[in-house]
Each structure stands twice: as structure tokens, then as C-alpha cells.
Image (cartoon, rainbow, N blue to C red; front, side, top):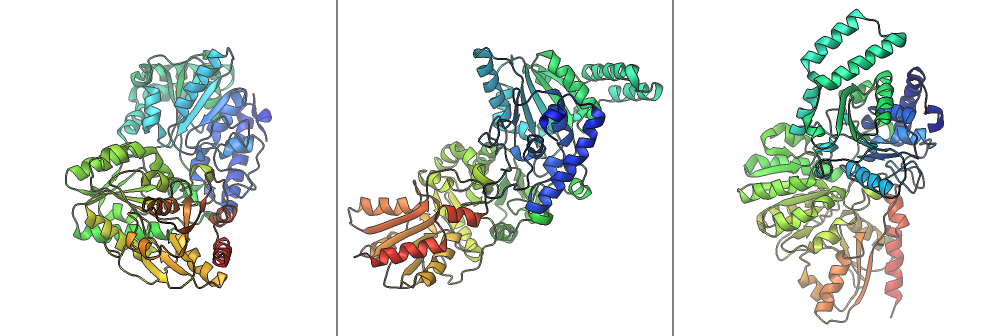
Length: 596
């Protein structure tokens, strides 16, 4: 079942393909894990697009690329190695296939990218259609809205497919979504449509004409000024699971040569009862549909509930990731104090700044990779005003199978440059509570980073304070290992055992400020920094900058990730590929210790 077989096929044949695709998706995600409910909901839409358009000559641009699995199956990728090292990515990747017109791991990009491709096509005198496939509430993202409102005139042969499933990752609460969804409940059209359906059989040539009449009437009853004033012809809403209707409507759209928004209503998780009932839970799953194990996320959720019970000023802010960042229990216990901004990281951060200005203590819970989108707001709205916003940065470091678009290697280097912002990296979940309370007491902007997956309790809990910023975990007279972050500290302790060197291991749980007292004490030693982040501008660079500013000669080596995008694999494989395992550190310790 490939794109060439689908192109031009009839709806009845496409329906058979739809079931095959769903079976393959369920089988693949059960075996390897991945994004399930979003992909199940887009099977018919993807098939209909391939039945009508000529990809890859025409360009298909996905928004929130986690809905692209059916597209990958139709373009010759069997997904038997999905999200595995060296295998098929879980997101569109132009390096992987010519059918992947644009890389997409974050939301909101497809409309702007589509406008850009149309501009390139028109200036080069080429002819093809550009289709931007946007869903999971991404239309409410600032980037998407900026593109929609960019001009009153949009290019010809540009189609935006709006996959309206009422969800982002969690439930969609945005006013824009509610406004758009009301279009599906036009009473006059429903009544007239019901009359036509009861009176006439929709079969044969007459049935096709009748469906065309109903489709035209739907456009008349549901005329949408919002989109049409932005330069689009609005068509819909259509049933995103009815292949007869989808193929017919898309065939007409292909002939129009106008900028069009097709509004398709779908069910996230379609065809798998458990995913339909709990689409957020089945959004991203592990092998055998197991929930992900994320020690720090769970610990943060419990901590937030405990602190909120005694601190009425404490509130949580998230960007469509309530479950993902561990706030489900908090949302249940303190519904008035959880603020979900939708897939809009920029407004989430600025909203938190406004809360802090008004006397609250906002905790912005967000993935490292998504925090990148709000960098300007962190700088200008929070830190410039020195406001007490706490950023809890989940998935910092290697994230595993989500790959290049989702790695958490960049935010530490980026945030180090921001004035007024303190940066913390607790070694385990027990220390997370100490660090959180310390950050709360400072009354200034603070960021706390931690990885996904299982995190062991490393013990030796010296409470953090202004004097004890760092913590010595293991004494020794040899090399001094300055490890920052949960995985780095855990590997450093393991590496000491493997190396056989009597080295000192220090838990550097504050990256900014550095513990200058400790740095002065160890200045005459051989010092090795170790982190799960980029070398460029990271923790090791901060230590080097400190000693350089003191004009003090030191023997210093730095271990971190090279400045490159890390492809999908397990987090352990990524650490091995970047030479950041406990074994790599042990060898580095041995070699350093042997030097004169």
C-alpha cells in the first residue's frame, strides 16, 4: 500500500486501506511505543489527501508532526523500526524522505511554512499545490495565528486542512476552538440536511449530485467571516472520517486554485476504544501502550500539591501539557489554580509574569524543547522585571525516541545568558523538593531542570542553602568531578567505582550561581566537569569562565554533548553516541589522573 496505489482510488477502496492502516498503527505503537491517538484520528484525512493530490510534487506540510504515521506508511516506510536508533523518525524529516516537505516537531509552523513555499513556487514560476495539515489545537498557537492574519490576500493553490478533534494533547479549552467548533452545530443546515437525507437516497449519479448540493448549502449556512476576511475560502465542516465526503470535497478544492481552509471534524483515537475514551493518555505511550515512567514529573506533581495546600499564592501554568508535566492531581485538587494556556508557550510565560506582578507565585511547568519558543518572554517579561517565576523544566537532557526536535540539550546554554535568572539541577527527586523551596525563598526568577525516565534516589542529602550551594557526595584526593544534573551525578558516582581512581564527586546542583567557595578550594586540583547538555555555553563553560575571570591557571577538562542535533534512539544510546556514559567518564578520569 503506497502513495501511487492510493492516488485516484475510489472511496470504497480507500475504506479498506483505512482499516489496514489502523491495524498497522496499532501493531507498530504496541511494539515500539509512540504517538497513538493523534495518528488514529487522521487516517481517513491522510488517505483522502493522497487519493486526490500528487505528492511529493505537491507539498504536504504537517503541523505537530506526531500525526504523520499514516503518511509515513503510505510513502514506503513500514515503521518496523519506528523511533529506534537508525530507524524511522516519529516526526516528518526531509532527510528521511522527499515526501516530508518540512520538519515538524513543534506546533504552529505549517501555515507560515506553507505561505513560504507558495512564495517560492510563484517566484520560481513553478506549479504545484501546497497543503498545510494542522491539528491538535495548533491553530491557536501564536505562530499559526500570525500566519493566518499575515495579509488579507493569500496565495492561490494553498490549502489548509484543519483537523478539529477538540483536543490538543490534553483537552482544548481555547476560545478559538470553541468558536470554530460552534460551526458544526448550525441548526438550519442540520435540519435541511436531515430533510434531504430522509427524502432522497444518496446513490448513483443522482446521489453524487445531491451530496454536491448539500456540500454547497453547508458552505452557505456555515460561511465563516473569520477565515474569509483573512483571505481563505472556508469549506466545512466535513466529517473527517467519511472518505466519500472527504475525497469528493478535496477533488473540488483541487480544481478551485484558490486559498482554502477545509475544516474537518475528527475523533482523536478513532477506531481504538481505549484511545477514544482516553485520548490524552494514549497520545504518547510506551511499548504495549504502557504509560511513561518519569520520576521527576511525578515528584513535581506531588510536591506542587503539598506546597499549594499551605501556600495560597502558588499557582501552576502549563502549555497544553497538564498530564505530561505531572500536574493531573494538582488540576483535580486545585482546578482554580491551574492555568492551561494551550499550545502557546509564549503567552503562558508572559501570563506567569503578570501573575507574579500581581502577587502570585507562578510555577511554569514545561518541557525543555518547548521552553525554547518562549525565550524572548523569559528574557523581557520575567527576568528584565526580576519577577518570582519558577520554571520547572521537564525532559532536560537526552529525551530518547522523540529525537532531534525534542532534545533537551539547549535550554541550559540559552538560559545561562539571561540576567537575574538562577539555574538549578537537582540530583534526585528528594533534592527536587529542597531546590524548589530554596527557589521559592529567593523571590527572583529561577529555573529547575531535570530529565525524563526513572531517576534513582542518590542519598547524601545536604540541604541546599546560600552557603552550601553544592554538595560533596564522595571524597577523594585525585581528580575532582563536578557533575551537574541527575543523570550526570548518577553516572559520576558509577564512574568513580569503574575507574578505580580515588576521585572526589561533587553534586553541582546550582549552575547559576556557581559555588565559588568550592571552586576556590579545588583550584589546585585536576578538575573534570560532566553534564548532559551542550558543551557550548553549558555548565563546564561556566566553570571555565569563572577561572578565566580570576586569571587563575587550572587543570580543567569539560565533558558534554557536541553542538549537533541528536537523532532518535533510547536516552542510553544517545549518551553512548555522545560519549557521555559512566564508562566514558571512567576512562576520562583514568586518563586525566595518569597525566603529570
